[in-house]
Length: 318
Figure 1 (tube, helix red, strand yellow):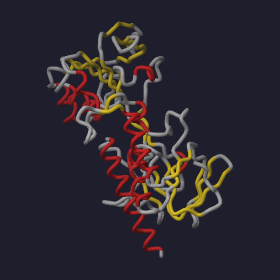
Figure 2 (cartoon, one colour):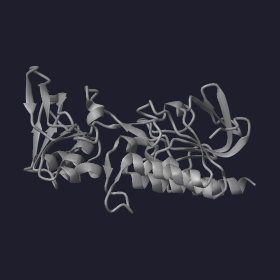
Figure 3 (cartoon, one colour):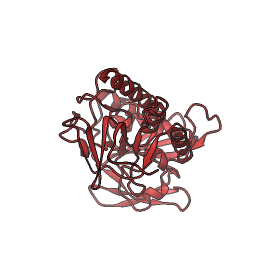
Figure 4 (cartoon, one colour):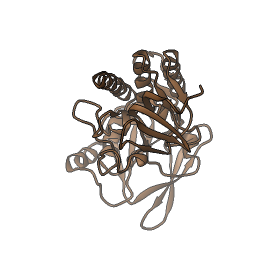
């Protein structure tokens, strides 16, 4: 849809994953005519539809007992928001100014104004930056054990990382996998003591110290990886059909630096039990402020919360 950049809108939603599109559905149904600036298709961090666009089958989203492909699920979200009057701009926000009202958002040199803002720019998983890594996401390479663990029943798989989240993923995956290799770059784990004990006492987990993954192998699906010893430099193959990357996440909050309150890690801070940020009329939802759950369903839920918070806030302004 075309968009009039001069008008002051009720709400602009920045980001279009499950959180942003759910916020769009709710604000559109409340007759707020949201403008959703959904990101650029060429961007890995701000692409329309968020991380689910990089996912194959989603089996844990309620209402789809047979499962649904990630991109199709996001397209249904988008169509539903559009049906109620949400407007979409397939561009990336280049800068914002929330210092005075109306709030201002720029896409390149075009300025858009709104009485309120919902930030749902998400977070991206840190990756290994290996050739074919992106090609194999959803085909053996994953960043979410909770999402994909079920597909690896009875298989040998590996988890990369040495922190709490890596051990949590490895422990969870032992419910399905035959064997889980925990690939750790150093000679010790960064994880808390209780998590370390959990990994060392699990007979299905084998820790490979001073090791990193340097190559991925397989055409249509992952078949094996090459491991390199970080001390000696030796290489060896490891036959695994699944590789879970758990080296952390990075929220997409660069443009809000110095504007919105955030944790040291970059996640936006919201008031307890709400989606309010430190700026009145600016709300945040989804993975951009959630580093605990990071699921499509929880992101959608917080998108609903942001829309309701925003609608009530706008009503109080009148």
